Amino acid sequence: MKLADRVRVQSVKLLSDHWYTLKTTTFDYLRRDGRWQTQHRETYDRGNGAAILLYNLVQRSVVLTRQFRYPAFVNGQDALMVEVPAGLLDGAEPEECIRAEAEQEAGFRVRAPREVMRTYMSPGSVTERLHLFVAEYEPGDRIGAGGGLEAEGEDIEVFECGFDDALAMIDRAEIVDAKTILLLQYGALHLFPHIAG
Image 1 (cartoon, helix red, strand yellow):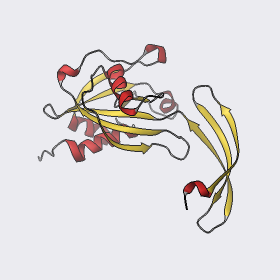
Image 2: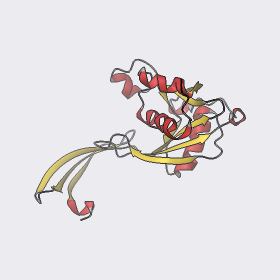
Image 3: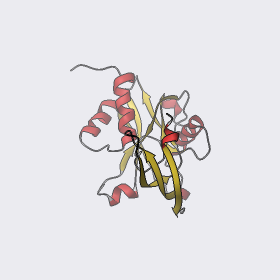
Image 4: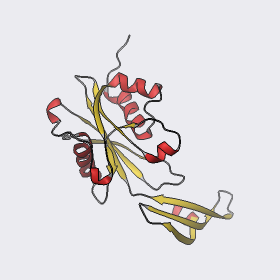
């Protein structure tokens, strides 16, 4: 049976359409035991996005950003968020989006991005699916200052970091952004050779 055959939407109510779209939905769900159960859920639709880990194997480094995230701040985050470059698709293809975001946020031209996974970061309430990319960079690929778009409230600091230092930042809870942790762990498993010692 298709999942779509197990869901019968009864009603959808728009709660907010200011920044992104928040809806509440009442639906019937066919449980595993064959009974239909009425459920109510809110969904926050901000569109899909893309993120990229820019890495340099020779330097054993990555490009990261620091920026203010208000929702994290109100939940107790008392430092700027350390993240990989990322952004919403806004109708663009994922690769097109991530090339533009890497240049806009980090100032780097992306030569050969490779999508390595797709993930839902908070599937219990947020509809967003993220396309996660990796791409090698060289020093000459830095073509601008980055920093994001002031008109969108972005004030992004860009920095290069040793890959092992970035992993240590996860251990010290200095990197708490899930997409960044996923991409750095992917790097540890698939991109950077292990150095014993």
